[in-house]
Length: 286
Image (cartoon, rainbow, N blue to C red):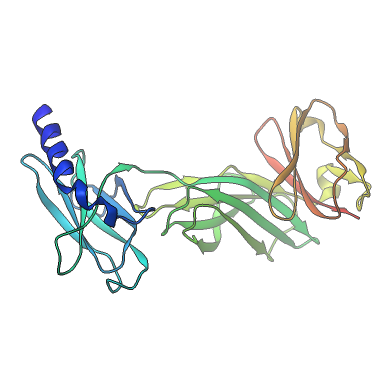
């Protein structure tokens, strides 16, 4: 193991003088990938267009595979590519510029899972629902599948959105086929390697059936939220139209007065109960 480590260090020293060729945001993200013969793959992000990325590893160190970044070299842009690699082998990445010997070096890091927050549901009349969420650490190639259920156990896909590939994004989808009664929603997250994860589950239901109420609504400054006893203790989070949390508190009381001095606009009031189920309603401040 020490011998392998020294060989890798030597390779880094040899290639280090050309590190200036690396774009600032170049990355190599290693993860398991069942389609690859040896079970692992690497996502190359932010590399110069048209370069050939040589992936080194093993002992003695050798080129394991080469991946070409889409595009034409010299165009000034960057691109992404994917390649299969062995699992549990330290790797070094060097991009060879066509017609020259210079390139760049970075050492692989572990997969950075996308983080999803501010997942909320807002009723639009009696037959539609606005589904909204924010992501962080997002990579290209992620697929978001919006799922809906009547019983919080058996979910069906109702829409698919592709990631924008930026570090932080806000997504929304309007479900215009909402059925009467309680509906549960969640987001299925599939990354480029095929790994699947899920958001928390949120529910939406007609206000008259649920017992959650906001009064007055529309409001000017102060308003009161009434929460069903079965959800206590509960967390109240209020989001503005940009998806930013502007209020957060925890309560053991069914009736809660909010004195937030909010600016005019539309807000999403989200109540998360002790069973981790969330209820969201729209508040208008005038």
